[in-house]
Length: 280
Length: 260
Image (tube, rainbow over all chains, first blue to last red; front, top):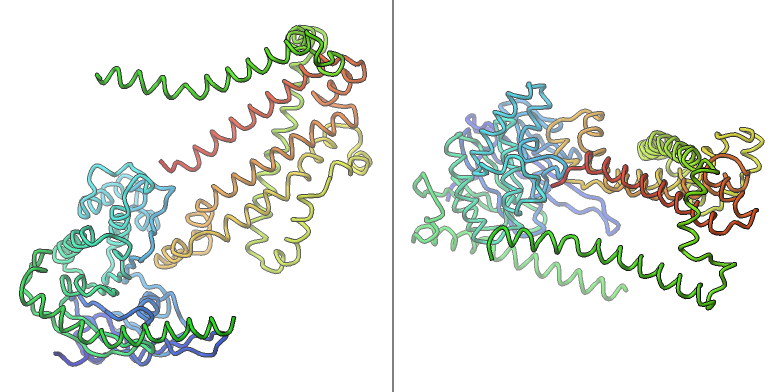
């Protein structure tokens, strides 16, 4: 086990420092994220894992600059960010391709925004489409693709903006386990090829261990850093690693941390449902 | 089965619904003809289809039906363009300025179900007995669904698409033109379709009521003369305007929303 990476780690390109988020609800204020601090080093793959309701997606929104009602500081290469930052590329959990654009036009979207000439941006888009393994689908519309393919289009679109940090919020959550493992391979391959600094938000232990250099385990509400686990598995990795003994040990270790938190979450949900029932 | 045979089979199957639809229409006319000719249906209330078909030539030669058809089509197109420009802009502005939406949405919705055609005397006073009274009646009556559906389309844009735009640091204008507007186009087209139905009904209705303009006036004249076959034949031309209108709209929709 490694201690939590502190924001003062001089080598970190992305630093989250004392992030706290509260939400006002009709039942009162909810402390969603409580004093979370960590850093991500250049080229590192860090996953944030925790049970449902631990504030993972809230943290994603804070780091992506989509939520500004938080306390604490997020900085990229020493620069404090106050909103969406060009260095951070986001891939969302929900299907987020533009259904009215072809695959090429979807991927070329960020290039169009910077005014790149059409011929050049189509060429660049095709490069990233090839990188996510969608050659031959350039002129298709998202409605003609499977869920996994659409998520790859979203990934290619984000990569096309050439972000310093790739921020992903459970991008494969809606996919079946086999597709998820294979897409994990694809992400790993791209991450290693581009040496892309990546922060993955997930609740899937296998996915986190398969891809990460480090895993930050969060507690159930309020979300705090429970532990940071170094994943000392050889690289380059593929999904074949899931059958190794050391992989199993990491999964078991993280599950033992998460089990207690997931149980707390489940009990809290049951209590909430009972109260709702009694109130109605 | 060879590929050619499969293709032939598939074409035959694709054209079946159209053939069945056309066949049903022909069967309906044959049954009506039979019922009227045998006296089971009074021919002074419903003229036989053969008589209606026979009156087309008279309408073309004596009543200048093509000119009237073009007048009504022109009025509908003018109202349609005005609806698209002012209706969609109105919806966008009401979505953009919440106070405007809160203040006006209820009465715009109320307007949608009001029989606005009854306001034709007021429009006659304002615009006179001319084509603008007819166009404005069609336009005003059709405006509410276009405004309401535009608001609905923009409001129901999926949050994740808006967040994608935010993550790419889009300006408000880029957010609108590159995400909100294309995402809401399918719903806007539903509003336009509804609006054009309202516009056509009100345009022909107003032509009929003020006895001016294209097909509505002709239907009024023919009905006054108790020329029932001619009246029904003229109604066929109104249906043709509607068909042309919706075919054009469908083409525009396919061009603007090529979703594969």
